[in-house]
Length: 582
Image 1 (tube, rainbow, N blue to C red):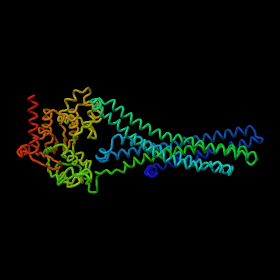
Image 2: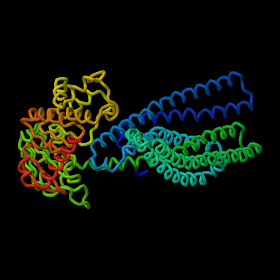
Image 3: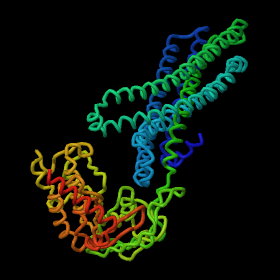
Image 4: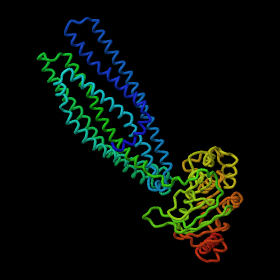
């Protein structure tokens, strides 16, 4: 139970409710275990002369005692089970908050389906431990001790004989418990694969249909489902073996009580009411023993799930605020300076960026070009600290970037990423996503600049139109213009566009860039593009090649160099002429 120890802080948080729950368990068991004593006394009195009123009194006492035990059992569930739900909520919130702060590379290395399995199945398995498992462990433990003590007080020898099967039972619980742990871990891993497959299919349904791969995907999912079923069946077989063994061993205990106790009754060493009470008490012990086996099952599953959750919760945030962070910084102007900046994704991997030196004054536009894999996107990911540099320094307004609070830094940057993402929500909520409260005027102005307002007018509900998961109802160009508008709504001091016009026609692109130039007059712009038409009017153009700056200058200066930029320019010019000729 090493991994489950991490739940201690949650138990401490609700210690008062747990205390009351344990007290209710004690009281409930006290009353419920008193019922067999009343039955014992009633049977023993029946062997003597007993009045009808006395029998009625016994009946009322038994009914009243059972009723009180039932009331306190209800209170047990209202404390311990409620606490389990509250801890489940806290654990899920902590898990979610931790996930939100993990670095990008974690999500690049772990599938969405796997994370979703942790957030659902694993947390639910842990909740079963916190609620039912804890409740029944305390309940059965207290009941076992009370019943065992009462049985000893009735007849020591019969009680000890009845417990002879217990050592074998303990061994079986230990042996089968280990098997359950291993097999449940395998089930959870396969469930993660299933969830990942389903999530990928839902997201990529257009690709699947385009390539007529429906049947293939059905077959692949069926194979995963069969494997998941097979692993579940292996667990079920172990669990199915567990219950009969428990019933067999408890049945042997009952036979022992009847045999040994019956002999003592025949020899007048034990009263009939006493052996009746012993059999009833043994029956009361059967449930704790069975429940104990069930609890062991839950604990093993929760241990496996908590191990998986702890692995994620132990993941470092990587990009963090430190003691150097100056929280007095509330805003930025947008001047950017990079000095000898280098970056690698992991220590053992080669550098993606090497000795990058750049200065981008406020009010200017820097364009970045380069072949695929040159490091363009990696470079701009360093500005909002989606990754931290591994060498050199970055300054914003002459302040080291790691001294600027992350929230302040990122709120000043409008970032349109290469892969467009829109939420399954209204257009208005998507465009105003970066604002704490929606602002109609800003949204309209941003839509106008991004040339998106005309499209919105054609939608049935305007800005309240729901655009579906990942903006599935929009075209590629509409998605890009929507994300450009979203970045402008927050009124950024720094605007980063990562190949954000690839699905936009050149005429619309020119209109957007013209309006952007006015909007960004006192701000800083960084544009990545493969199109010369997008970057030619930038104040400075940088050409990256294999992680280093190969060329930099204005459009005319780079053409005069007659190197990589000029080569790209003339190729695109030729492509345009061929297209016009055709």
